[in-house]
Image (cartoon, rainbow over all chains, first blue to last red; front, side):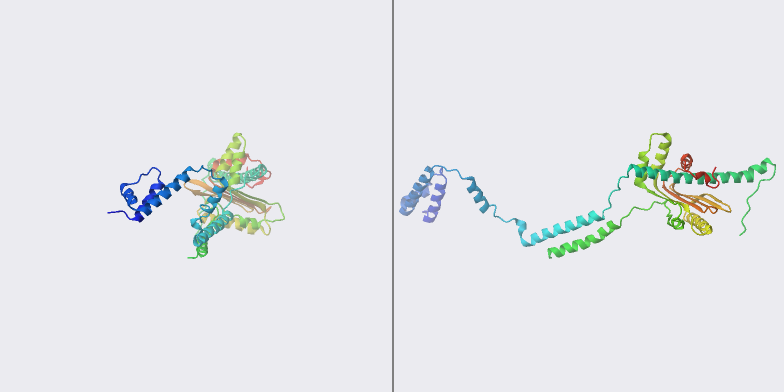
Length: 169
Length: 186
């Protein structure tokens, strides 16, 4: 089965794009039998040879930047869709409001007292301890007096111990 | 759903949580007794001593003392206390009202599970010392002293772990003018 001209032209372009490619037998057979395709192949071969012979010119950086801006840099971010953008903005607002509220409602750590505050507090605390201790001492003394009066003194005097009076109901 | 409407709903959902955080307060210690009623009874035109010391300041006091052995004892005592509250002053109005308040407070505390360590009452003086116990440890102490002759009232409340014996020893080392005049004290 002979190759169609359309297929042959595709194969010609593919073969010219790859400098190391060789023409297959069926393509060569088509070119031998089809003058139009052979003319296309010869013209393209001449053009490609001429192009390969041109000196290589470096791409100016400014041009590269311009190409980058116009191609890759122009691509819109995926989240820039209107719905997603609004959701992102809403999330930022909620986070900001929550963070601000938490900042104000969170109790701060206690302020470190100054040496003067500590000294004053120590004096106050010692005074309270003093009063408390004296109250305890007074209670001890009263209890001792009570025991002396009701138990020890009568025993020394040879009298019966004083029993506490029972409360009438 | 509209994104901003969603944000509003999220805020509404967070509302109760934020409100709870705003209401959060330090828990009241078990051995704490409010002395506001005694403060109201004291004459503002006379000399008043009002003491309100709580955890952080007590901890600072415990760390700030010197290397003296007496200081170390006091350090240890302060370090275990959670609060010290006291009102010392001269009562305005009739002495009988203050005497009644001291008596009622004593009875209320006993009814609330406090143990009365001592109660001395004569014609002109009332001294009452009560302790609150939890887990075998004293975690609150109240000392009430009132002398109807000079109308001087002392309300003192210590909250936190308290060693009564050491408290007595430390307190007796403290030299505060006028302490010796407490009725019954030797």
